[in-house]
Figure 1 (cartoon, one colour):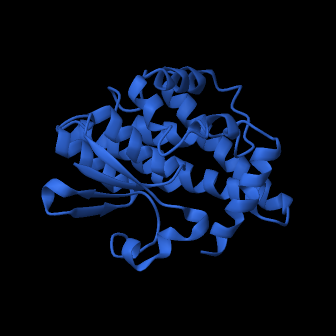
Figure 2 (cartoon, one colour):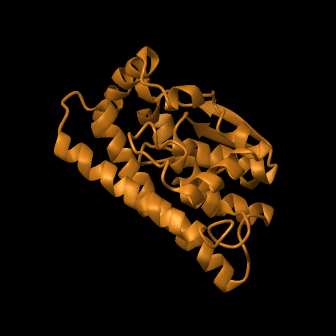
Length: 228
């Protein structure tokens, strides 16, 4: 059994989608980011960096794993799925996983900060991160022009990138002109396990495309996280 410490964010969904796809039993431990649960001594004992997600493997002497990419690799190796064992295949999956970890996630995350959360609208910063996010989504689109998935068969690389790419409207990035990306996102969204995973710990799907009151209230609340 896995304990999953998480919140409704793309990085959190990377963990829950992976667990759902692998069929590994898990128990959700909700971390309220706006209340600062991630900075409590109990949570910092699991992840000194104070970020979600974290998993605790009860079957391995309560072994804790933090950093979303690291825990995805851990879970895939534990189950023997979603990550090839041959050196080249494994490397290809990890390359595209690192593409998300080092590029798409951080850039879309900063786009969210300046477009949605930061109280002062700094247009140069908004443009910088939205443009870079669009460039990275275009890289995915080009890769998917000749490939059904990013690294051979469906893998943790697809899960990681999809969990972020699907939120592009929240970042204020238009991806309607990226047909290969759209095809891939729709195919993954149609996987029952992926659909279940992005509803953990609760479903924010409608809000991700909203510009209404709910989105504004969420954004105001999320501002508190910027100082934690």
